[in-house]
Length: 401
Image (cartoon, rainbow, N blue to C red; front, side, top):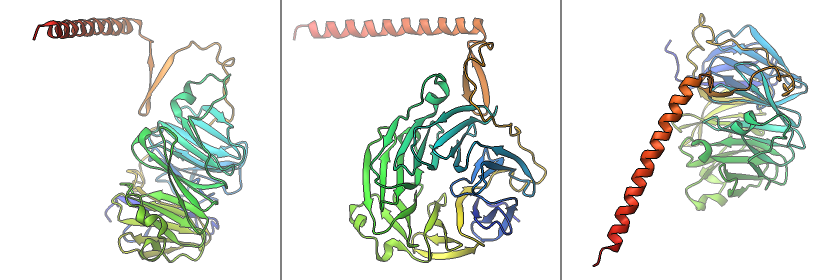
């Protein structure tokens, strides 16, 4: 059997047969099942393409499997409270988890707890990283969505309280889902809420770009890859498609703008890489695959309980290679932030994280001197060029006409 390019990953709350299942996107056949416990909504994530993580429903720990070893739990990450949501940075360097109203941020390579963010006033409901791993967004039952800069958090002194870059506070009821678009810091964010609205924001400025009012509570939201359309899952089982290129469709949620088939609230939405297929998970215990152009349901995957997670992703290279092993093993994750006093005996140095590796800056004094000399020489060259341009302009302006 040929290895699929894209797969469907789902979980439900019953855990009668499995915790998580991987399906072929185009045939619907079951490929892999991961056993052991069950998964809370918004907590299923893949780390570095090598580990599958999910939080145990109503418990204070995170289950971790090696992506190709479906029958063996590799580790349990114990947290100080019930885990409500999880996300991993696309570059695989950081893991963030919502624990009640706090956000825990770990460095994956060392397992070090980098920061505990306590800016939310009620439980955190969802977390998402940007595609360039530079920022992440948190949302909660306090009606707030917060934009966090990762570079600020990892460089911040432990004596200072971390603050978000932007506070998105235009919702009047708890936020149920959020989605980050592409383009890194230039991305757009969509937030869905029980106040029956979906709002689109600009990540870099925190500015509200668009607010769409529906007739029902919205439980899930996603963009298509090109961000032409917004898909919103309602509490009545309908999925609304909104064009972001035309204002005509904003008020039209009937007829060919609605995907109909689910009998209960739609809690998960995901779009395939080519933008032609929409995946939805619902509390009616089904996952449906839709053709976006025709709005027709082309496949229905029945589960044993309300669906808690469902998404489409590119198949990791190691998922179907039984003998493969992760390049870097998963460390033991710390439960406490290390204070500056605890590290007083360690020499100070600045670390730059590139890919999966860590390199130290200013460790080699000789290389540093050479680099400083090169930069000083470049500055002098630029100053000369600037002076020549100034003299030329002055002569040109002083020349009689």
